[in-house]
Length: 83
Image (cartoon, rainbow, N blue to C red):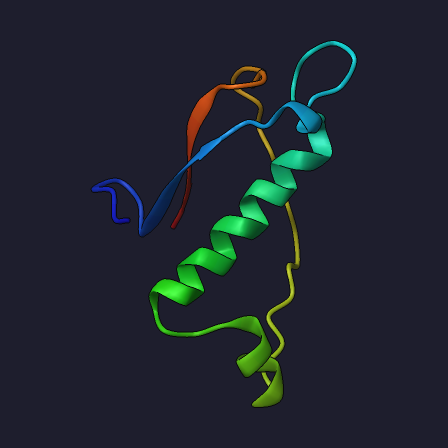
């Protein structure tokens, strides 16, 4: 799904098991959301990681930088987007 401010975006919802004892999303899950968005973006272009690997192309994450604006909680809906 295309958003006017991003190259690609998808809507997601926090699942209970992604939260820690404080009731907020465990920080490692934010990277899972980003990785899921990356896979969905490639699929929207007709690509997938398995086929790319078979063709000798391996797309690795070089660096991740996260700025938390607010903690997500179970049941929250949010947009994951990329440029």
